[in-house]
Amino acid sequence: MDAEPNSTVPPDSAPRKPVADLLADAGLRPTRQRLALGELLFGQSGDRHVTAERLYEEALAANLSVSLATVYNALHQFTQVGLLREIAVDGARVYFDTNTADHHHFLLEDDGELYDIAGANVSVSDLPQPPDGLRVARVDVVVRLRRA
Image (cartoon, rainbow, N blue to C red):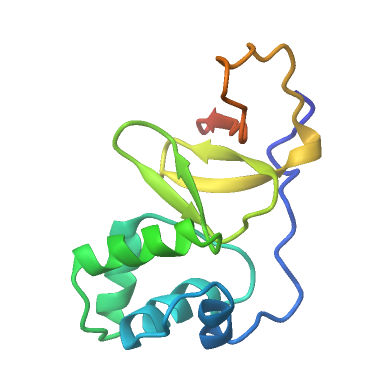
């Protein structure tokens, strides 16, 4: 592996599409709750890594009337249509990433923050052959860090 902790993918500098357009282009009906959660996720500059719980807290802080179940449903719907990428870091924590390009992650275990690593900075070799009829869809590398 050739990645250094500071070799993160730079934030997306291009202006983002309006959330209503993102949802419509993905085939999702722009409901009030999807639009509001989409604004929290995609309305900011740069890419984000959020858990459902963190997004729910942000929604409450923004005075949005949504349940945690609604947040989970929206995150999974956004993932199914390719607007988000799901990153499972262990059995209990799942992050949703607005950067759907090929890349990997540093996980700072002390505070649970994820940081992008450019896909070209990680080399994975000698993957096992998948069973007949199956193919490797993607390889996610999570490099766990602790403060020194």
